[in-house]
Image 1 (cartoon, helix red, strand yellow):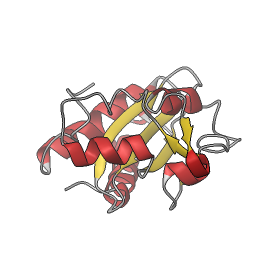
Image 2: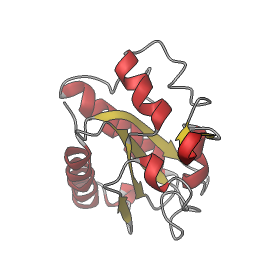
Image 3: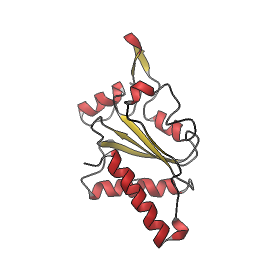
Length: 161
């Protein structure tokens, strides 16, 4: 099972190896954003935070136990928009509780428990800025491939890339 922490560790290892072995392919991760609270508690704030919303990078959606459910990328300085796209506009229920019914993952054919976590926004979201932006795709594919080699593609990822 890949976790948020394992992916951040692997991202740093990958960055260091490329910097040493293939300097022309080096990239930087100047800001790594991790939130410890479920998305439903902070979705009204800038995603993932005001300073990285207009950057490129990779992002992770994870279950409350930190198991990675999805690895995505933003390559056009639209990290916030890419994350929001995976949730859609929330519908507020009684008590101002958000339900993310528009999430493509809620309509997916995966495990019912995972769909419920997305519907209720009970997932964790983490992101890493990647510079230059063109390297975000490389990082996404590498991390997805690393997951396959270490237990399997995250359940909401249908394919690598």
